[in-house]
View 1 (cartoon, rainbow, N blue to C red):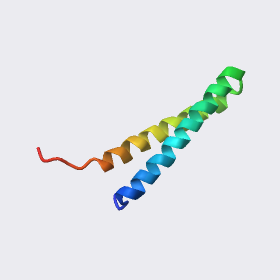
View 2: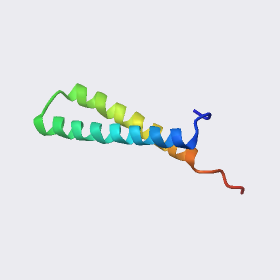
View 3: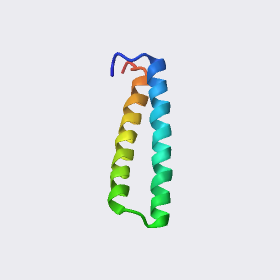
Amino acid sequence: MDTLTPEQISARLAEFRQEHRALDEQIQRMAANGEDELEAKRLKRRKLQLKDCIARLADMLIPDEPA
């Protein structure tokens, strides 16, 4: 991932954030309808993975500052 340009990182961030929002909405709908808990857990796990990826990519956009 270190070879990505800032533009590519920003584009990936946007994709991941969009997927994260979509998963959040889907999980909320499933909880409201009392749907499959196992599927909801799987979606929550994916949502956490996306959150970690978003954090890593966001960190890549912040330049290192000298101490």
